Amino acid sequence: MRPEGLPAQVKGVDLGAMPEGLYIPPDALEVFLDAFSGPLDLLLWLIRRNRMDIRDIPVAEVTRQYLHYLEEARRRNLELAAEYLLMAAWLAEIKARMLLPVPPSVDDAEMDPRLELARRLEALAVVQAAAQALDQLPQAGRDFWPALAVAHDPLPVPLAAATLTDLVQSWRGVQGRLRRAAIQHHLPVAELALRQCMADILQLCTTRQEPWPLPALLPRNGGRLHLAMTLLAILELLRQRSLLLASTGGGEWAVVAP
Image 1 (cartoon, rainbow, N blue to C red):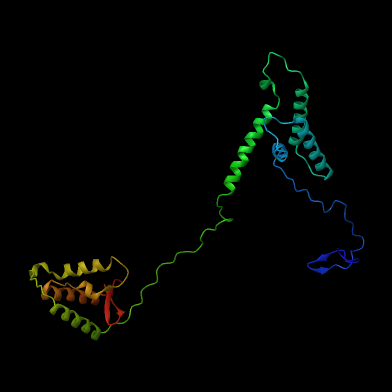
Image 2 (cartoon, rainbow, N blue to C red; image 1 turned 90 degrees about the vertical axis):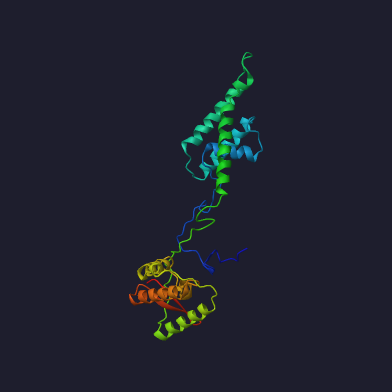
């Protein structure tokens, strides 16, 4: 109960007194919540609320409740579509036809004036059930939102500056591993053409954007001549800037295509 002299509040603050000359109609705050998509929807709601059988509709009771709803809508100054009035006339016609005697030669089921109404109500019930099932599915903007993040290009790998001393140290490490190799192969000089070796190394390095470890480019079982030719090809590619030398940390070096 609100105390006297405090008729209302605005955002939690007492209004104090009503403005002079303010007129509020008696039905200004009246809310009508029962909204239907059409007269069939209203009839189906009445049947379900009263737990009636669609195939055996008590037309008199349904008509009474239907007309009561229309009267309530008029009392609340709601505009009714013509379909609602047409349905009221159809219900009155069905009610009148049910009072007429049925000829003995005609099947009662075929002469039942409620059949067409029952078919329409059943079709509407199927559509409403399908719509409810679809509404329970995940919907964009209600149950999930699409990812709006833009995929960026990968960041370039930072390349550390390499000196001649670093290259010599890498070469000494390769020589040490070569001394420990047990198998030696002597390949003809004709098969180790410098240009072909450079092309093979460049093609291998361009297959991926990440740096290629320098030891991985050197032959393990190709002999000293093959090793020297490969190293010479790497040096020539570095001189031509077809490859760049990068430090991978821990004293290891790698080459990468620019």
